[in-house]
Image 1 (cartoon, one colour):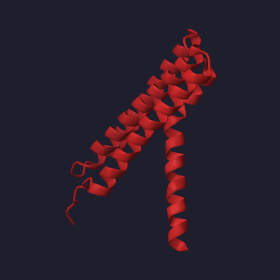
Image 2: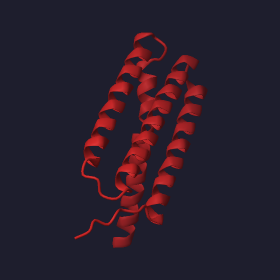
Image 3: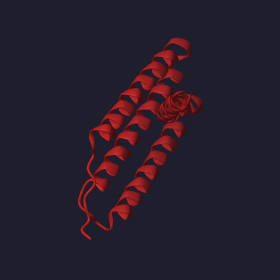
Length: 136
């Protein structure tokens, strides 16, 4: 049986694009709120954390897309995992360095890093509400 390569269909592509814009919107709202409500150093920490989270999300999405779209390559999962762990280690080093040097505050950084998680939780909640309405 011949392996048929996966393609990124319009619904999946639209979903990823929608999640990216939702991430950017959440990042903007969280950053603006931080600058309006807390000390500028804490707000910069939120900004730094959000930027790191968005870059990681973008790189992960690109890695997964490239792994899924080409015709069957048996070593794809290994490459995806290697890239994931390298990115994870690099992020850990950057976060350690930022906190150790005192350039960011840990709580602000953590709030910024939560941007993607909050977006996904919001998306999941919206999907659950849609399913609940369809059942009724």
